[in-house]
Every structure is written in C-alpha cells, then in structure tokens.
Length: 173
Image: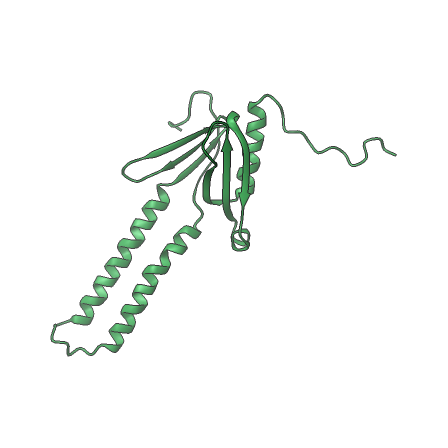
C-alpha cells in the first residue's frame, strides 16, 4: 500500500458505516414520493405538454444526483489504523488528512446508541497528547474492535504488551 511509511503495518482500513448512506436516502425517497403524489393528482390539462413527465424526470434526476454526491462523500472518508498511527482522510477534490501517532494517544472512547449497537456502528473519540480536544470518528463500523486495536497498538508502541487479566484466585486457595 503506497500510503504506508517504511516498516509500517496496516491493521485496519475502513469507511463510515453504510447507515450513513441509508440516512441520506431519506430525502430523495421523500422527493420521489411527493412527485408520485403530484403525478397522480395533477391533471394533464395544465397547458404545458408532458408536464407530468417533465416533473417526474426532473425529480428522478435530482434524486439520482443526490445519491451520487452522497456515495462520493461516503467513499471519500477513510479511517486507517496502522501499528504507528491513525490516519483520518476526508474530501473529494481537496483532501484533508489528520494523523494521530499511536504513541501519543491517551484515551480512546466509544459511544453507541441502541440502534448503533444493533447495526454495529458507533462513535470513537481519540484523545492524543498535545491535541485540542478529541478527534471524533463518527459512524465507525465495529467501534469496540477499533478501540481495542488502538489499545493493543498503543501498548506495543510504548514497549509493553497488553496484559492478560489476572486470575481470579492466584493463590489457589
């Protein structure tokens, strides 16, 4: 992968959860429902030839354009986790990248709604030393897995291995 640094290993690369697309489809669907209602209720004697056809085609074109824009925006947001950093990339024409070195991460918090838990997406907030507030990764698929991987990589980077939980009764008594 050309965007990795020498000696860097890819752990996870993902886009926002597909629910972002579903949420964005609501507006075009409502538009098409409104056009269908207008198409069935407006009489064809409006004075404009093929008025209903023109309105239907314009609404379908707007809905299709909306869906294309949403798809491109969804594809243009990428979250990459490596053994050295977290990289957040956004933008279609202009590209913005935010890099968070793994060894600077102080806290990684996940937040999920009930709906997010059911569908497997949530919000991850990454606090890094020297940063102004947390960096938010919204609509991230499997946020708990991402958070756990950040913890594992952070511990490895700092020279320690993530410790296994202590046995419940170490003395055997």
